[in-house]
Length: 132
Image (cartoon, rainbow, N blue to C red; front, side):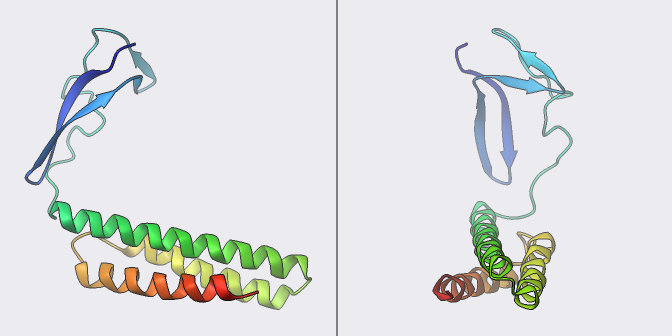
């Protein structure tokens, strides 16, 4: 199946054609020559973003930092459990949960929080990777 342009996405001032090689909409595969209508497009009714492309990118970087921190905690939790240190494993699980909660509460327009999370996740990840 050749790629076909099926919709144009507007995000703030940024517009790009969404290309799909194999698209499934509501469980229905779009074949050659099929198009998505505005009514059944996955992003229909989403509206316009209230943040800039730069703010959105910074937000994605912050989320990626959180994901790396959560993953680093997973490694340390597994190591503590393997060593039979349930107290340490429990403390690490709690810290990991706090980072996961931050991911849920972070929003693109709150650039102060986004910058703080990005910086803190870099420091925390360095510290966690140094733990043995």
